[in-house]
Image (tube, rainbow, N blue to C red; front, top):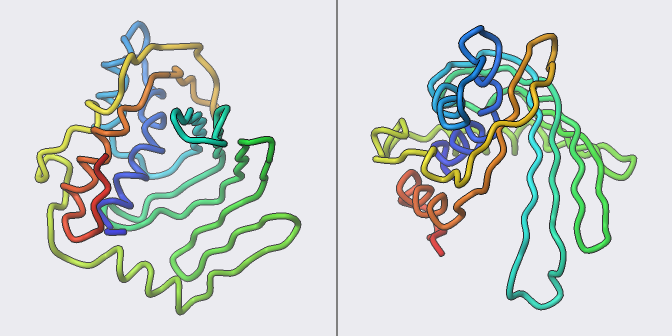
Length: 195
């Protein structure tokens, strides 16, 4: 995975962080909130991400798959993985998983099934070096990518309080084919991801 792909995934997860916290959000429609979320630098905060994926045409893959992430994060710059301490739950096919992931500059850990697994300083260092390699586009605009085009049918929901900040929920569908095409633009040396 390239650092551009990693940063794009982080940007997707942090999109809600830019959707609250100032008086300008009152009355904004979903598209305006998403645009503001992508254009706002966020140094730290608390992220809450809920995703549901329905698979069609695959035998034995009936029912939705769900992923929820929640916890604090701190940015270490636009081209580095952020520090995170997040709880996660994943479910699908009648199986449920719960755990926690902690990412720091020096190491990473995953808690799962009552055990904690350490990635290890050496392996984590190599992973970060790989993410930070130079070459290719550095921003969405440089690559001709607009992540807002991945969202279909965006709509505003309830206003909720997250860490003392009123935040407007935005829901919508994800155009997976468009997203994977853009991943290939951002990560031209990786294996093809397009559908």
